[in-house]
Amino acid sequence: MLIVALLLNRRMRTALALAVMSALGSACSSEKDPQAGVLVVPYELGNRRSCDAVGVKIVRAELDDPMYVEEAVCSAGEIRFPEVPPGSYHVRLFGVDHDGVAVMDSLQAGEVPVSVVGRGTTVVADPAIKLTAAPAHLQLRWALGFGTCESAAIDRFSVTAWRSDGSALLLDAKVACDMPGDGAEQYRAVPDLQRELTGNEVGEVNVQPLDKNDTPVGEPILFNFNAPGAGRFVKLSVNCNEGGCTGSGTPD
Image (cartoon, rainbow, N blue to C red; front, side, top):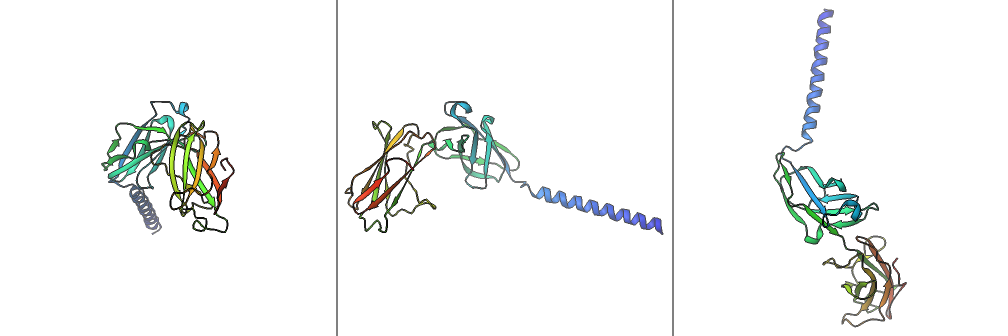
């Protein structure tokens, strides 16, 4: 009887172990989508420049869905998305320097369309996606004291950005006074749809408040600074009332 009991216990333990292994195997296999495919995105920096020459450490790739973000050491020359459901996507790349700043990107030519076949098939984007220098980013915020845009008769701000020597206009944009600010600091992004704000050239910015008839309210405020470099942010602040606006003349 003892021998039979031992054999039964051994069989039960074996069956239990096999059941656990089967369950674990099922769980592992369920983690991967059998319909997914692999997307490989080769890239080039400028006119085939080296990572060190342009100061890029990491290249980050993003697909339409924010769930699909991958990074690679710049020298790898490509980024691999190991498991992407089949379908059509748009990919954008960013070259990030040692400070975490995206100094290069692929947005000059717009987002690049790619298609993923699925079923384990590897698709390689062709041709390689080219990254170019990212523009600088200009941000502006304003304080109206206890007043409002309406009480100060300010409808919008005309913002012009120039080369450091003032010789060439790089950007001419307008920002509405009632535009909501972003976060605790309340900066507003000055639009640069054509990516004209070259980070290695910009060094002067004029801010002119305007009323609803485009008539200047007070005098323009001039800001001078050293060119910040590609991908960097230039943050400016002005204080306004019904007589116009004032500023420090230098970035925040």
